[in-house]
Length: 152
Image (cartoon, rainbow, N blue to C red):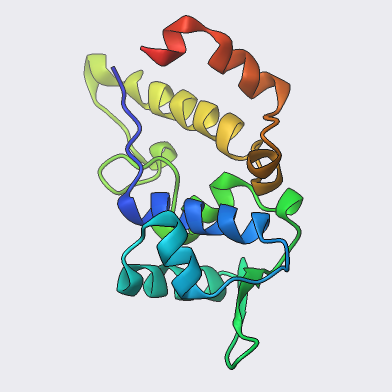
């Protein structure tokens, strides 16, 4: 069974971005993010720098400083955050699945990796930060989570 692994960096980045999306006054300090989501401070600084360089987050120094989303929460998907932090969604030995080939009987395995990536994208590119903070997931995602098998 294939198992998706989400790095600690990507998990923290998603949680920080969700906090920024939920911020009432539009911006949050790194200290507030670290405390609210229990993310180690130095780790969070690196993550926020990466998100800023990727154009997903903006920042300002000074007494009114902090971080905020560079775009509307409805325009930032979970996939955008994960890619900014970890690169491609699904890699096989560090390669994109379309660049991997197998000899002999294992040849169809490449198509399995392509299908897995397509399903990963179907979820992560569909769900936005706005969906998360509203608590209302897209219907296709809700349908997947309604299945008892999804929880096992």
